[in-house]
Image (cartoon, rainbow over all chains, first blue to last red; front, side, top):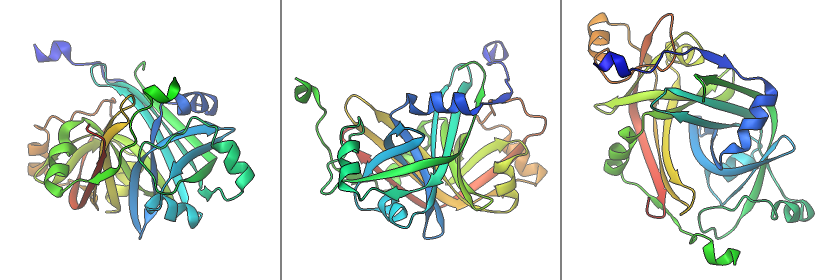
Length: 140
Length: 140
């Protein structure tokens, strides 16, 4: 009987850039991938997207260190359905930048990108998207 | 009125190794972080955990290339609740290994780690966990 309820086996389909840009801001949490001390690190981050740029807030730590070093990083966002084995993922890659201009920071403070954690100091970081790719499986 | 429904601002708490090992297998999909062509890559993967080793199936592509090169990689798993701004994430880091021993592969084929995509060829990859860390926010 198990075979009868097994989801159909789909193939991956590549998403075009327009579809990637549409899907990317649909979820409030993505995962930031970068290197720290020569090791790969993936950490969840609450983000938004403005004009092909990912924006998030962070406190002192690995993410801010990477941004201060202008490290290359990627933001991954995905959504999936376990029952139907369908879903999608988008990967946006660029170079991190800490926002230091007070006028620009004042604009970003109005965005709906509130950090979930209490933060002694809050720093805005941008990731202008240079590479964008995505794929889907099934009919998510 | 907006302030009245804003979730409380929590602080992050570090998870100990026992808690990380308990949480890691709770979700069927994690995100594999590694480098490909000097760029950070994060891709979703359907996985399971056996004896401190992450196991997944993959077809030819970036993940299998990284495994064939015995690249250092990390698997990130998280769960969160948008309304209460609570959640947790676990990061398991190690070196990828393609399983080539037929007897070992026969054992892995019995695990509940079915790839969601149709795959012309299926390769089992292991990530023995060498570093394990996690944190939570709120009361997830």
